[in-house]
Amino acid sequence: MTCWMTRATLSIPSATEATTAGGNFSLLRGRWCRMENNEKLFLSQKDMLEILPFGRTTLQKLLNARVLPVVKVGRKYLTTRKELEAWVSKYRGKEIKY
Image (cartoon, rainbow, N blue to C red; front, top):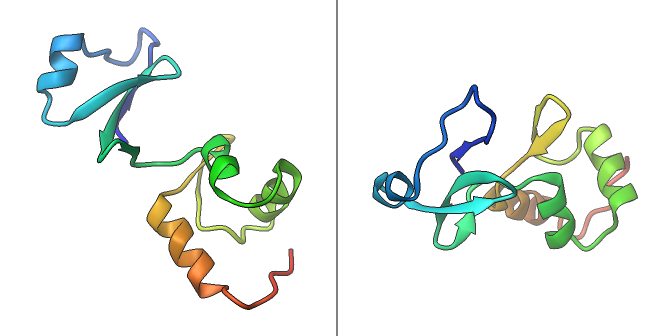
């Protein structure tokens, strides 16, 4: 996902630039984000909560234990759907201790 934040220090594409920049862009949470097949390229912690079958507390514990395949940028965690699917496949039938 390529995003341009709405802060003055980062560039913000116009609607014309967003549609002609070689990809499908959407305005998400105040940011222009590149979408692939109508799906975000990167998932935030909020997105992971919608996908994974457990709650916020368990997700936070797994993130803090560095069990999930994520990249931490400042206070935010990012991952991809493919990484999450690979992680679930790797641990299928196993217990995860955190």
